[in-house]
Length: 363
Ligand SMILES: Nc1ncnc2c1ncn2[C@@H]1O[C@H](COP(=O)(O)OP(=O)(O)OP(=O)(O)O)[C@@H](O)[C@H]1O
Ligand SMILES: [Mg+2]
Image (cartoon, rainbow, N blue to C red; front, side, top):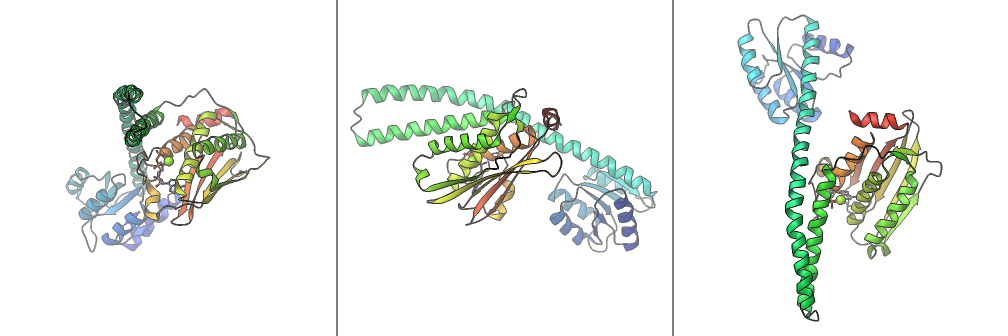
């Protein structure tokens, strides 16, 4: 985004950057710039310090508060180096002293975008590696006492009069909660487990769907009477090169969410199809339910680890799905939903030789 109150200069920068392949939007004052940063989340902002309404310094501060990943290049007037250095301390990525040679703009922009990308990548890595260390530690610390609790409970159960209804109900609660904690620990471990790279085979997605429906029908045995599962599976579906167990896990998580979203009665549709574009094409799987749906403002958080709206949810289900689909299989996963109407989860998995798929996830 170019922020300059001089229309001529703004247009000049825009044309130049568009010719280089950038998508450029413009703002002629500070307020407009901030509004656009909020609505468009640009990757970089080229910011003139002399603006008619608020100071460039203030705009920089607000941009940093909104999104610290936006790279801001300051444009100063002649002799403004001191100010520029000061602003770099306040978070600007680079500065250009006006008048500058137009080529130095593209050089600076490419440079700051490169730094920005690697910083974002680093951040991801830091978060992930610390979870990778933390979860196994957590699992160890929780599982041992849980094991002991389970064992002690079994002894007490054997010695107690289970005809006492209150006692037997209390036992059941403890058992269920122990199971819940065990499942939680397992999900945390699954989330950070290095996914097995060597187990890529040709997978028939329709077959995975059938297996998953079978499993889910057992998990939700009672509820299955009121929830219909309809399938529309393309018999010509090409095979996908992937990890069978991981795909099964991802589809199970999605279907589990559909079941949990339906309060009483409802329907879940599963449709598979092939989309040849872009070459060599994608297998698409759509999971649609007519459950409670998702509030628009929550759609952005669905894939964040630990985001949950459920009392007993861990919020890892979709985060794991995303890892499996995107990082492991170079695919895509998207959720569309309307509150009160239902939700559709779309998974796209590229077909193609294993090297390509593996190459994609190594990035
Ligand atoms: N089909 C759906 N319908 C309505 N809301 C959904 C659906 N799928 C996901 N969500 C929303 O997304 C949130 C995150 O889902 P996710 O699977 O990651 O975690 P969870 O289901 O809450 O817990 P977990 O899967 O770990 O048991 C859910 O809590 C729910 O609010
Ligand atoms: Mg879930």
